[in-house]
Length: 397
Ligand SMILES: [Zn+2]
Image 1 (tube, rainbow, N blue to C red):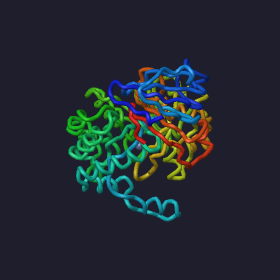
Image 2 (image 1 turned 60 degrees about the vertical axis):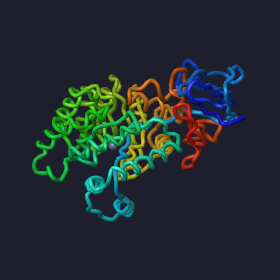
Image 3 (image 1 turned 180 degrees about the vertical axis):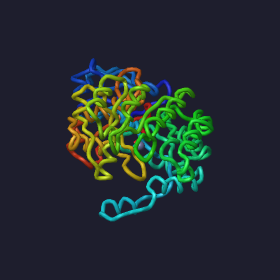
Image 4 (image 1 turned 90 degrees about the vertical axis):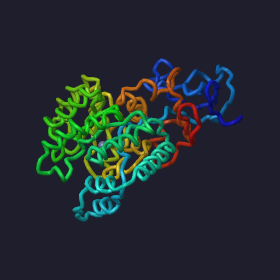
């Protein structure tokens, strides 16, 4: 058999899949729609057929999965990958218990403003390749390290060449040049900066937190974005209790991201809304912070996504499998729930029905594991189990 991969109009069969996660409950067992001894047929960039290997139709090319597991490619719905610079010293100081007074996000803002377009794009594509090798086939990424009209717009322009899921985060922090007049910065974010950024973005985001933007500022910013055709998502309740989650639900944000400090009312609001709770355990890992309680959200009926938050300051991992392992070990998720949240959950957080599942009509985005089951993603933490990736029907890794 040869390596399967497709060009327009051709078909490829992946067969002898020991265990296939479809996320289509009508196709197999449980919420994961698990199928044993399965096959998938790809036509062009879409899935054309899913079912038992014994009943698979013929195709132009074929690949033998040799009993290994296949899952939908990961949907990483939260990252910050348009940046320059390095914050190794900050991380090293934090993990060594030493004080460190340099400027956190501001350090990255200064380096990003100083970088060329080519440098920013090279850095972005490097991390995208890294993520792809680890099974990520859909990713969202944000601006937020430019914080001027020109620097935010160029970050989004560069990102939009690589993904449709681009988020305008001019409201990441109030930049030092506006420290004395945050209201003027909010006016810029909702005025000239929004005008320059909206053509390159699908989403608008705010870091709603003490020391960043309060609930009223966040409402003003997200409402302006909605009026300009962008859809909201919010960095909410990460470092402290606050209004972010309630605001996310009020504005029908696709996602409230972090959700580490939640009241019972916050959990109820999420459970009774279309807003996904996106948990980002790489941030808690990298800052030795309290874990978000996924079990509490799931038991209440909220939809949970798992994502990397890949960024150079607080979560410098592009590995969704690592986040799955953390979520199972420390956040009360079962392995099945964590895999669902990192695939179908991420798709829900981006309001996408064409990724995060293996079903006819969906994009042919698949990860082959060097393991008999998706459970190994949590059972074998830190082991590079992703041994093959198809993105839009093309074998990429
Ligand atoms: Zn973030």
